[in-house]
Image 1 (tube, rainbow, N blue to C red):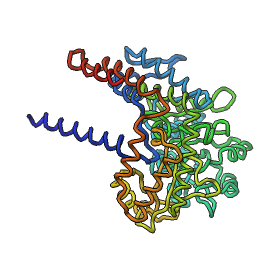
Image 2: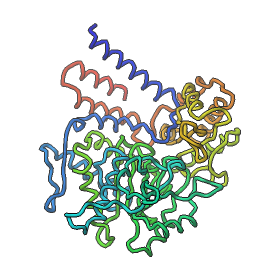
Image 3: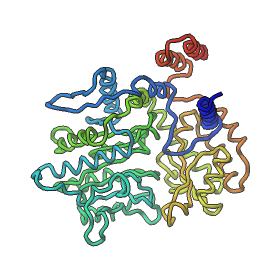
Image 4: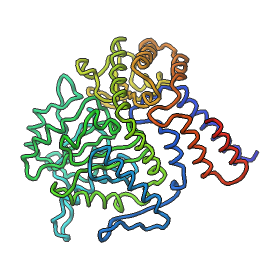
Length: 478
């Protein structure tokens, strides 16, 4: 065997081993991940994966700069309509290829919008002030000056740092905003942008409270909700547009069913005063931030959105029930669960536990991984730094989609607590539990999916006898 063939054989073997481990032997509890369905994955590797379809609005019509784009144009338009239905909104921008990029597109668009009446001879001014969630208290990295907000906010002359202020939080529950102090902050700071949303996300954001508060301001700040972690819970958890948000961003692969992409949604129609902001957001998506916008995952996202619009009600309800059952079960086993027991510890897919009495969060996360429970360590609000973390952050969304219910998470809580508290080996128990949850739910049944998958594969593979046999074998599984 040549060195080239040997490398390929080894990589294929390693890939299969990882597939089997993560998909058949592990409890996947990272809140920012999910497994797309088989049909979504096959859409991702179909012909559009290698194509381009740059386009922009020019002289009142959408101009495409490549040929043979009719199919993907129709896909993009259909996906826009499906997501308008999902959010109950009017504007959808699909070209960002990540949630981080979606945020950056919005920040760029806001700066352009704020300078809309500026003479072209003058430099663009930055946003005067922004309010967001503190990174150390669960705020998302992409909404920070060290992330996508970089270079879009003016400096504070007194501190020499970006003029960014953080939501004040309650002393007895740092996962909730202190709305009384927040009202004073908004009045004092007069921000031009307020960013809701977190990566350590247990409770709802005070969108309605802030919207009513700033409605008296002229001009009022733009209200943006980064729903990256809770996009798949839109409506069941919060519905920001009905609460007064102007724009929603997010990644499409955490609680949402899709491949790794980003989306920007808005309600910026005539009469809102923000029509020009949407124009700027579109232009910052292309050509401002993207060229090729990853057409394979765009096609996959349409398939995933079909699934989400069909199954979201049952899926969302089960996710929230499972998270609360998991939190209660951990708490009953003397694992310190963050949040308030009176509130069920969580209103989202996330469960946070404090493990410092047993070791650093990083070490406990590695111990859990060695036992096939996949989590991530997390700095809690009173930790000094991420590398000295006290917490473990978990999400129930992926295993919910594989069919786990409340009682199953209670069993998992038993294994997890044994591993954390006494370093007991629970790997075989975890593998045994996972064997009961291998078939993905909230999508087409396996038999129908395999039949359709065989048809897709037969169109992707070269037309020769060996590969057609492969597709036929897949059909036989159905």
